[in-house]
Each structure stands twice: as C-alpha cells, then as structure tokens.
Amino acid sequence: PGLRRTDTLWKALGKAAVLHEAYPRTPLVLLTTDAPAAKTAGHAALTKLRGQRRPIHDVIVLRSREDLERLRGYARRGKANQTTSR
Image (cartoon, rainbow, N blue to C red):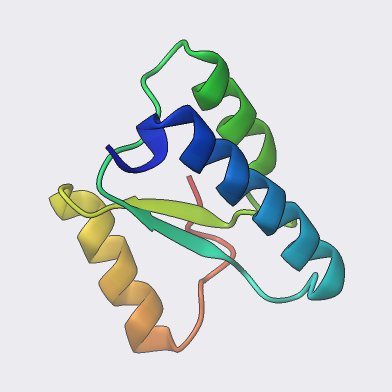
C-alpha cells in the first residue's frame, strides 16, 4: 500500500519536514509502491509539501514507467534536478 496507508504517509511527511529543516538544499525523493488517491486528505497534504524548495522534491511510484524514468534521470545527474519536479 505504500503512501496510501495514512500512518505511513504522515510519518513520511513528518520526517521529510524535519530533514528539510536540517538540510534545506538536499532534495528528498520518496519511493513508494502506491501514492495517496487523488482528492483525499493525504493527497492534498502530500501536494502541499511537494515541489521546489519544499520538504519533498518528488515522489516516485515504483509501478510507474514515467516515474522510474524520472528516477533514472536523477541517478544519471547525481541529484534531483529542481526543474523536473511535478
């Protein structure tokens, strides 16, 4: 269930916020098997914390070819590219 599980999602959001305060220039990319469903409170919360200069740079759903291609791009460049965040 990955980040669809409410407890897992909120734990990840809290840790991301703390890490962002300690290391604001380090982009954090979350890997998950499932993302929160659209139009849920979890999706809304994740959307608020995701993006440039936010605690979560990107979320990669491991079942998504598009997301895996983005992850490959991050690996090739050595870090998350701030211009490719969704």
